[in-house]
Length: 208
Image (cartoon, rainbow, N blue to C red; front, side):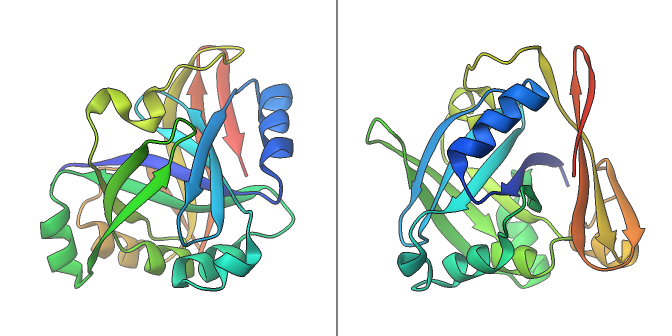
């Protein structure tokens, strides 16, 4: 089964402040993503080529209380900017969902130009409750419209997510993924996304 890291979610309390920090401290630029209808959340995208970092914040707390995803995001995002989840792309989403007993949901977010970015996902609720596990995604857009491929002005060239470190149970993660081909390090302990390595032309950046 072909799996690849798609993106990492960094929960933030203020999108604009997080964007400034990423640019000034890490040299990574971002662009507005859009609103997630029904979730009360909005995001910014840090494109890295084939992957990306998603800066995500609750922007409408009242709306967030009306959906399971909104409530999960609200409970996961604190005052610190930190990774709260990760996502794996697959071309075999139906097979993955059937193997793990997951339902497939349709997702979308409104882009600044009024159009919508659409995808199908399996397991996002499980992944937010147990962040050592990723959720799975298939994008319903042409490859060139993937969020990681959007052009921005980074201070240096990023070359993608090189590794992820999580806290959790190595055997459980292997069973969840059904493969050990991904560059994921597992540190036994409480479930969490501990660190993310981003390779750039000027060295490695580590998000914690």
